Length: 411
Image (cartoon, rainbow, N blue to C red; front, side, top):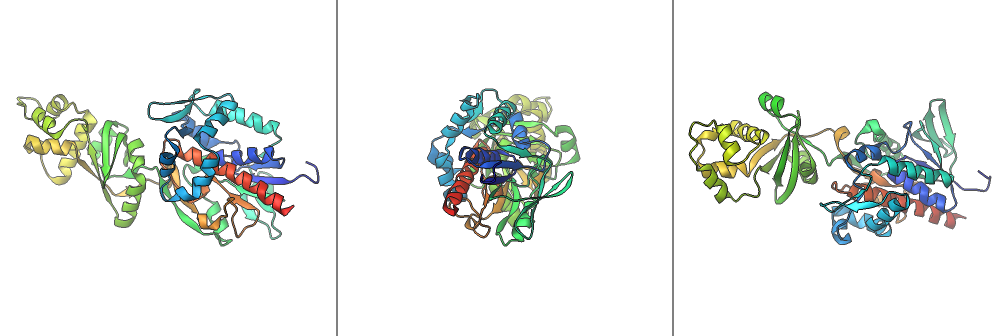
């Protein structure tokens, strides 16, 4: 690096940090990406195990609404780097995308590793350097960045810094939320980090837990308050998780934090009207066991029958004693009492983070001139479906552009 070239430090080698690095390198800056882990993009690779849902194809107004109260703060960044731009960027890396039946967008390779490898080759060709096993610990008294490395403490001088350290979910992949105390000590307002797109705990009976742990509830509809979501849920040893649960998790989390519990209702046969289900359950049972009768008459899976039995035990009611109409209503509104939130370390993403009031329009932290922030460090959350990665990429690009603007004004 020449003595006159501007050096930018990116801390965090996930999608937001790497996108900021690309924007800055294209702008002519010398960029080094620092990360505590021995390799980059670990959480991105983890996401790729399920196909790498990059973004979503729905119209932009509906897309933006998924960010709820954070939408006004993310709008400019996502409009500047919208879903189509992310798809074009992926294709330029040799990874064309396709739209799945749900409207979700995936690379045709259906995994993250080819995309990440191509991206790292491009960054390398642009002169972006990687400094791994560098755990950021704050600033020295004269404003230099401090890193703990295998060779001891290292100090780095940078003209500007982009923080892209993620939230606190899946800490073993690098995002452990340790930055919260560092920034809070500098007076930065941070909303408490909380589980998002998470599972919940349920006091299952030992019999149900031991038999059905890991079993999916397929084709169900989950309802909480006025919101209903179709999809799949999975019974865990400690509770319940899965796509349909994640879609309701923000409201469920807030209810549990407020009241200590929340009741989720599960429709096991949501496509059957109560009248038709009642008619099927009115057939003579004969010598069949209750489980066999429910399997044949209502086409319920063993785990669905087990869930019904679990609900009946909780209320002290025998399924066999219920009239067909009452049994039909229970089948399509099985109550599950959620008594807690799964640990943040197992959540897909994180709610909370740096308050947007602390940032200017270019994602610079107002009280820390020259320090920008992007990605899951910021106080927003979104459902799964491509919205998480889209906002991470978009805010990374916005922070990179913000650094270039700030440097041009300072020069």
